[in-house]
Image 1 (cartoon, helix red, strand yellow):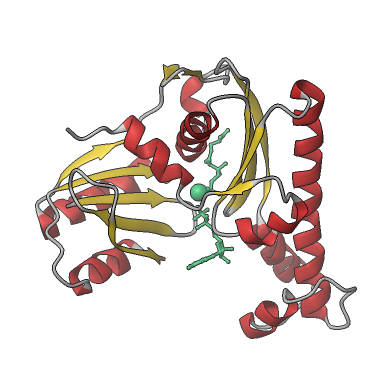
Image 2 (spheres, rainbow, N blue to C red; image 1 turned 30 degrees about the horizontal axis):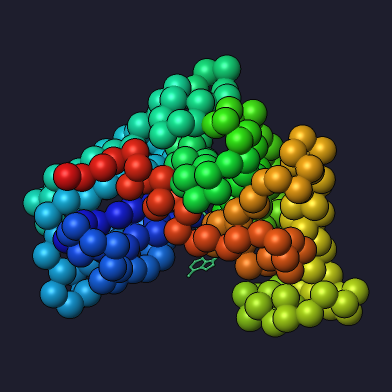
Length: 249
Ligand SMILES: Nc1ncnc2c1ncn2[C@@H]1O[C@H](COP(=O)(O)OP(=O)(O)O)[C@@H](O)[C@H]1O
Ligand SMILES: CC(C)(COP(=O)(O)O)[C@@H](O)C(=O)NCCC(=O)O
Ligand SMILES: [K+]
């Protein structure tokens, strides 16, 4: 079985595939290396032989995780790395290694699924947008704070914005003007993200007319999906690209 990991700034997304197949045997989201190992040990009947991973974390942190995986499961690990060009896509960054690896993999996945021009939007700790033309030219993209960063900035830089997670969860059931602090902040930040999305779609339309696909991914993608009904919500888009960057024969 193959262990796949997407190590973002806030969470590690993991899943296990049957070797030589696309069927997902187990999956989860965890907050730390230790929690990952514990979840994998707790999952029944996993026979891990290989692992592929992408990380936007510091090298030292990623290496610690790899060591822990090798020690616990004796897996062979393949780490996705940057490239100037892959699967028909040319990295648009001046310095290709500076483009976040999660973005690069989501771009590869999006271009493959679209077979044409695409706009890839990822809503994690940060929110990112990336533009790829029909002939595989990555034009670059945009980065702004995602939902967790926006709400935490308000909580830590004001005296009176304080509310708990339960109130935050309830607040997002509707988008009427907020009548509590939780509602006002949670809905305000969500509308910021939706505004970001609409701006990106407008830009893509100015380049390509209606001839492009929009992909939404990342843990908070469902918060914006109503704003772009034409978009495809692909929660595992980074994993699609990961399989392309780390083929395991
Ligand atoms: N099962 C889940 N576990 C944790 N966070 C989740 C989950 N589903 C959605 N989220 C949301 O996803 C966001 C984090 O997105 P993610 O793509 O994992 O970020 P990153 O890649 O930066 O670690 C959080 O704001 C959280 O509210
Ligand atoms: C933009 C990101 C912080 C997004 O990370 P995430 O929200 O998925 O944890 C990450 O892709 C990154 O660290 N990129 C390097 C800078 C860049 O892409 O220009
Ligand atoms: K991510």
